[in-house]
Length: 145
Image (cartoon, rainbow, N blue to C red; front, side, top):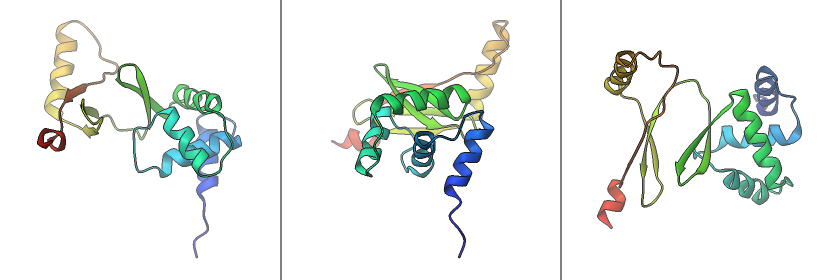
């Protein structure tokens, strides 16, 4: 039987990011790595931890997620009306398309869009360091309702 290395891997991830491996950080990082939903709010993380019997405050969850963002472990997005959601930073760039009715979020990569954005930056005299693209619309499921 293969031993469960989960806590070891989270501790290693935290140390590589320059963060001390505290219990709240390990619990939140474990939750993010195991979560099926990629884009979660601090409230989502807090509720999930409460439901699993963990005793962390909402303020602690916000603080840890902000530390993770500063360390590059997660990316913060502002999808709807200033509401922040977080996703693990897994190294690859992608853009987002969001349903304005149900809140569904899909990720995509399109080389034509990437090339066009780089060309626009160059034409305007910019050296593009990063970008984010959010497309808002109504998903196929909501269109049927």
